[in-house]
Length: 173
Image (cartoon, rainbow, N blue to C red; front, top):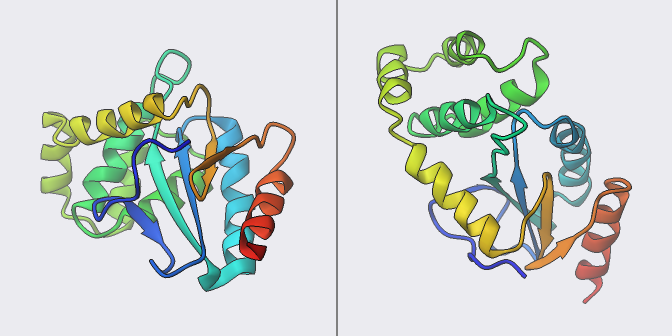
């Protein structure tokens, strides 16, 4: 079960009135998260306003050393009201997530680069990323991507169609 309910500070797509809430704990450097990103886009288009999607950070730094930087970059973009565009840039661009590329994405999004550089150097949003991780750990997340549909964890090991099925079932109830 999801231990941390959706909060005002979460990154959310879709209306609060949606019948189904999907929460993803993801890692920007994870190849499976990148694959799931495309599937989630399709599902959000299919279910439109019937599903609310929440993204939370869960960088697996032991295997993905750049994931935490990417999560912090996304939070720095969020502070400038550009979380979702940065999320999209990171997952859709295949140039990687090294600090120079993250900064290039920030420039592409017309972020205030002086503020972005300061936030990245000072690790301004590291605590927020760690809070997401702690919520994931409390929810028994062990790998990414980890999805919860209306609070119940969904195994997508064998494909995003399992998430689609869980959403469809939740919409019927």
